[in-house]
Image 1: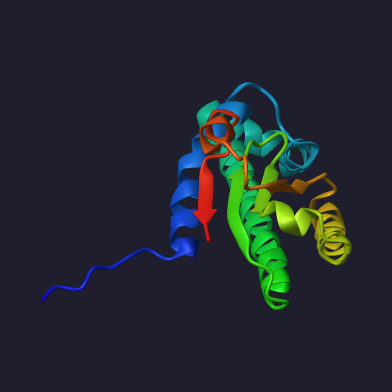
Image 2: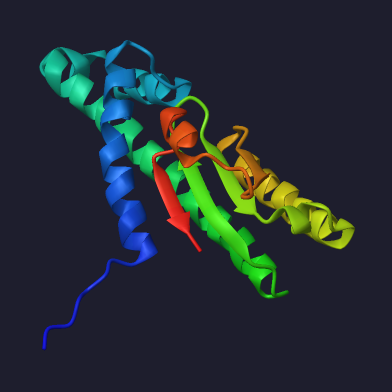
Length: 171
């Protein structure tokens, strides 16, 4: 008898994250660099820049961007799972997690049953925690995290995939 092995959600997220790193590389290659990367490169100095070839310099910049992207993506996942765990402690059943790791504006949708969206206690509790997590993300990265709730009753996953929500966890 053989046992089937299923990947955990965190492993699945890691695989999704690895697939998104190419987007960061192509974004950096389009000559757009975060101000911290430019400042770090400038601090390194002209002498180092002259000695190292342009390709090494580009690889360093891209590597730094990928590292920052990975850190940001992991925080998005952790904050999302934190939110889900928070609500599940009160026996609210969430139906799905959808993450779009677009480098310019990451987004998260958490799907719930319509009955919860009409429950004032749930809405107050959920949005209080969402805003708390958004503040944490903003404090860490000085960026806005687009995270919200959506009814699962009429959710079209194919449209979400088309909009860039490439990572999906179903509950």
